[in-house]
Image 1 (cartoon, rainbow, N blue to C red):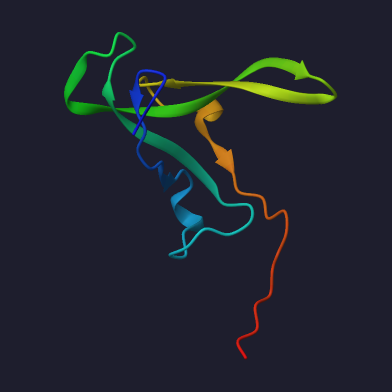
Image 2 (image 1 turned 90 degrees about the horizontal axis):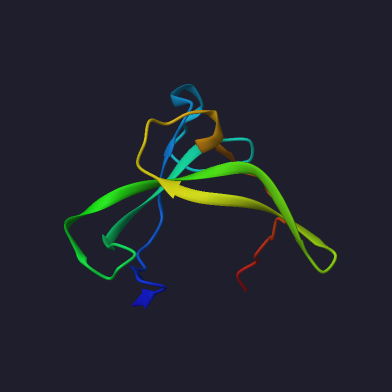
Length: 97
């Protein structure tokens, strides 16, 4: 599957703060998100792919009444703007009958 000149693959993560890892993601975990690109912006193949990380920017923009934060992918050194905090928004309880 391709989308805007990139091969769409699954995002991967690793815990940015090693001390809080318990084998699964939970609220307040700090992670880095990465994806492997197989095509550049000109649709040229990237041999063996290239890992890039999701980074936030200070730039915000509005669409209607919603405010969004700009994010980019990069392959530079990781820093604080590359850390993402997991937040539990809703919890569902399932019952098997």
